[in-house]
Length: 141
Image (cartoon, rainbow, N blue to C red; front, side, top):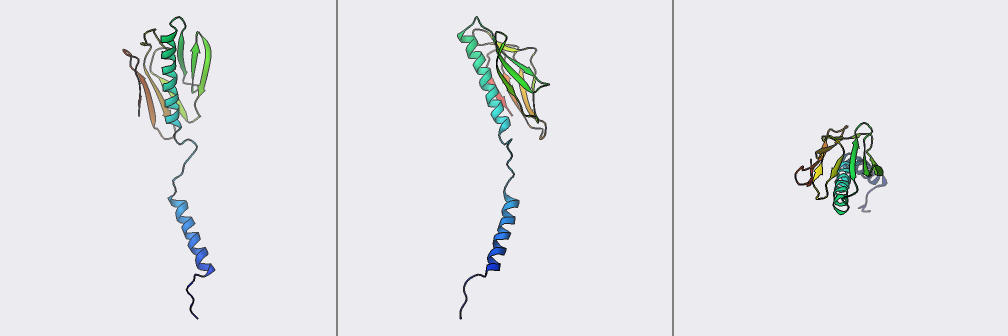
């Protein structure tokens, strides 16, 4: 009698070995995957929003304020907080400017500087720079 198939023991052994190899080879993806990119993009969008609002309505004052100790930033319209963004615990935000960021009616920034979003666990960071003369915003890694 010819026996061309595999035994149950051989199949279970092979599946177990494949499971072990897959567990070792598959990269660990955490919930923070892409978080810093997402937050830098959101921050950049918020800067552009206050720039556009200042250009559309020159009488009101839209500004962006950073609170580094609480890992937050605020969008304000004439002193009233419109939006609050809080970073996760392992991330920090710093601002190199001298006060709240706001824009003139022509889109040039007042207190322009660089906002640095850093991952305190890995040491990686992203910078959002507002160019003083033009108000152009740039994300740097």
